[in-house]
Image (cartoon, rainbow, N blue to C red; front, side, top):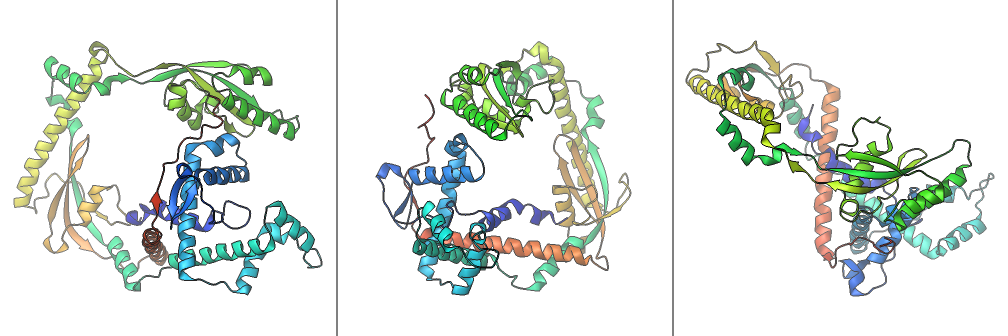
Length: 487
């Protein structure tokens, strides 16, 4: 239902992240002051830089907040996400300053009371522990003036984002029109020209198969694979949780800092080094789903450049509660083209399939040509069914699009839809109707989704405008942090 709107849900989720991702410091966003050397500048917003040091500090704080370790904070993808968030905050901050937004005292007080650390400072009698409050600020390197200013600034940004994203539909008629389009039904008959029905008519020659094999050698490669060794740290249910946490940190740090071997960590923590041969990008064969090397993050890391080319340990991965694994590639086996004699059967199958598909397409084209001259001829078509975008039956993708795009004033009409790898299906549309009594819940959901997309579009335009206004300029790309690589 409502496929077009659903396609944009990931984009919408990015906008919603603005409402739920907290600032990277305990209170407020980073200060705008301070310039560093040119080589440390990553991006400038209104002439003021976001530096690599600032990204590293924010990454470390955020990793600590979510219970991550130093390896996570130093990884390039994580730091890039932090940079993107800082950049967005700076642009929004620039907009707040230029728009001269103000925050009322009551709104600020209400916002402060929503902070868990602040709520915890209220005694049972309702009084506020001012001494603990000042100590809390001091522990975070803030005084009261800085704290209130940062909170007011964050609140301005929040209100700005909410006001921009709260876009209303230009007219309620729009959602009604969309709902009507999605409910409109067409009566359809299908006639399939399936390649499998033409397989008996093809018999590829040796020359044709050899030519196909030579032109498509990539299709007949054995997959690349690696032989690896790995160590696993498991929590003992009877052991102290704090002790295991310390071991887990030691496990992560040693496998990362001494990345040319697993032996130091294995010896220190009394772990056995295990081996696994023939690990492909699909994971190890013949093991259970909870096997440490079956974890997608582990497999992905083992096929990364650091593991394959440099033979370094992968960063420790928590594959399940209380279970950590690190591994390293011992031997990398690149993909290789298999000899023709070993894949002759598969080559013949593929060549035959392509030839049969071509016959099916030609037969469909011939029948389609005759139906264009006589669209009332329904001979050979399946029984008619009523379909709509809300209830597409077995029509998917371009099939439902092409059927619903037919002109209701020129029925009956036939459309031809290719089924890649299978053949062609002809659809004959001969009636259209608007069912009575639409689903009110569906209408409401569609209206909300349309409004959400409108808000997303409005916010994207808003950010693009202020990005230009703030003269955002990329100075240097964010690079892999190698300060603790152990290389």
